[in-house]
Length: 179
Image 1: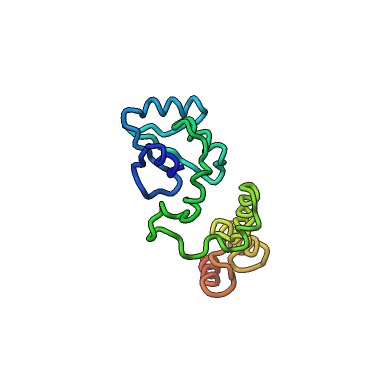
Image 2 (image 1 turned 120 degrees about the vertical axis):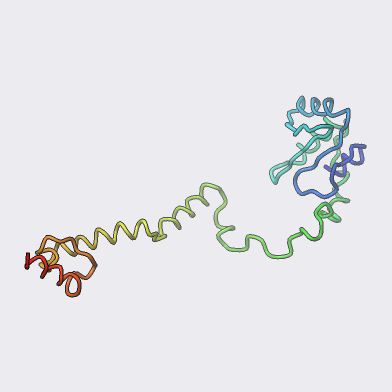
């Protein structure tokens, strides 16, 4: 799109970009903005400039329709060979990826957002956090203390530790008896 617009005489504000281009439209900004809206496109209107964003779902037909709305020409494919020869020309070399990207099999296993979210929830449910551990641990601890005939339970004192025999709990029992 950038090459086609440049060829049609519309200059770019920046020569490095990824998925968004900014056109320097000057006094023609309102006119071109209106043409794009009439064709069903929502562009970002700036002072003397127009912004166009693309993503992986943008089709060639849509790009052709936008090109036609802005320039009157609709053959973006004429620029495909030039762009294909160096498809990353608009991305500075220092910003280009040199390492693998999303190489873990999980990224090839889930092909929709819903399936990925279900997978993440499944992982979350496997996680043993302190909130789960403290609640379960406290319930277990209280059940252990109240189910045995230990000094803490007999003295009516809440069990101070998971192991209710000996140590501090025996001293508590003796203090309770002496009173």
